[in-house]
Image 1 (tube, one colour):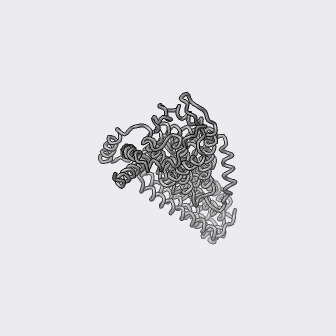
Image 2 (tube, one colour; image 1 turned 90 degrees about the vertical axis):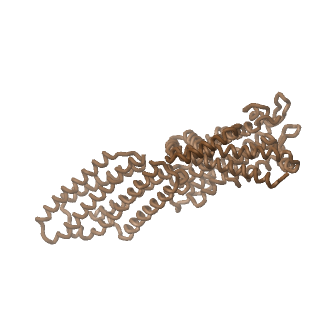
Image 3 (cartoon, one colour; image 1 turned 135 degrees about the vertical axis):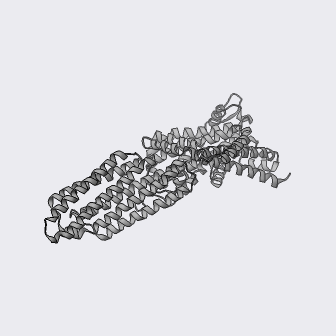
Length: 560
């Protein structure tokens, strides 16, 4: 027997399986991008909806690792609280069972037709939404074709005594008393954990486990502990993603690990409850539950793939049911283990969100809202300083304006990274609109600095009481416009007509005030000429700030 050829075929099947899974996940993400944002929007309501959101998103994109990594990114970006994120992680563990269920069905006959449909579709179609669908078909075909290759070759491996002996080293078959050997169970859990850490996908490891069981190399007694280890191993991906993030993001990754480890320990503790079925097979009650959950007698080697998938599903669902009531307690435990990190700021433009462009663009709108708010804050400080209401030093104003410049650069660079992903037409059109909005917000901070630099001349020239009252009212109007614009951007809720109307009113009021002030100063002494010019430039600055806020507001419909 050609062992090299056998090894290459098995590994080739595994590579095709993993590639197909990634391709299918990528296609589904492209199709479901906007839906993912809608599903995740319900996370903020309660823990049960957070669990539902995690399950739904994972079922949509076929990757719990991707969901947990994105969740870490959401927390790092300040878009989710720790408890909300834990709920999503719980749900992701339910959603990932869909992949195992899918793989356990014998759909080999659909593999090549799916590949044909996917390839033809990708060659013919140019629309991003359709290409996502064809990519999903192609991934589906590769997944089952790779699974078929592995299963076929592993049946040959099952006939080789030396390979069978390797798998028997951690055989977990029970003794006559019905109890599973303790060290063999721990060994199987360790094998599952290590394999998942290596391939970075619990779904891939479960697929391998099912293929080995179908080939007769693994029995159900050994397969279940391996599946438990798979669930522990998949937490490493989120842990790696949480490196160098905020404390809450690291706590989210820790909660994911604790959830799977605690769940595994709980299930292993139930192995002490043994019983005997009608056929006289004695073993842990959980195995009898798994046997009853799918067709065939798994203890006799019948339909092992479906039973392994059911074991995975039962474990994750029951784990969520048992632990969902302890989410607040788990959150407090994570806070105790990982203390607060006040020096690390929230990262609005989180790189882990780039895997889902719609979510990444949603993060950009939050960053833009924050940038607009901060730009207006600088303008407000500059205006109050000019009117003598507050004092601001030049260094702090310059530093604040430079931070806005840096944020503009970060948004632009992040959008460039998003543009390199596979985007829908709406997503592609949204990028230049966001760049224009960031430019408008940056111009507001520039105008604020320009107003601040006129403080001395304005104070020296003096402002008539009537004009002072009117300009204060105008500033309040611009402040309200800024507040409403920030809310509109953050919530991605178009309020174009209302905000454009406010901008127009500000423009007319500033124009009227400018004319009145010029008329009044024309009757005053010559010494106030410098103050007049500076004051009129403030009015011009307010009009320009309102115009830039209006520019941002009218682009919000492109975000929806």
